Image 1 (cartoon, rainbow, N blue to C red):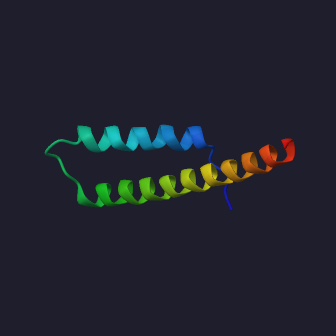
Image 2 (cartoon, rainbow, N blue to C red; image 1 turned 90 degrees about the vertical axis):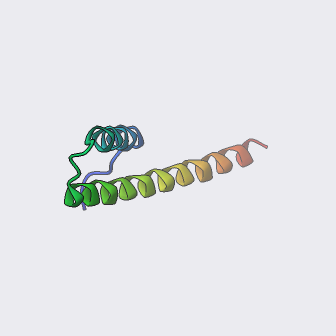
Length: 66
């Protein structure tokens, strides 16, 4: 298993993927688009999981403060 991707790195890569897709204009390479969309879906899922983990941890911390 590879190194864990940090949330900020995932967001930066998603931003780059979006910019790449927007700048491709009429030069559409379907294989490249498919690859980028698959990568974006993976990164979005990773971000969602990280946000859920953080939310859960914060709930525990807040419960312990009460």
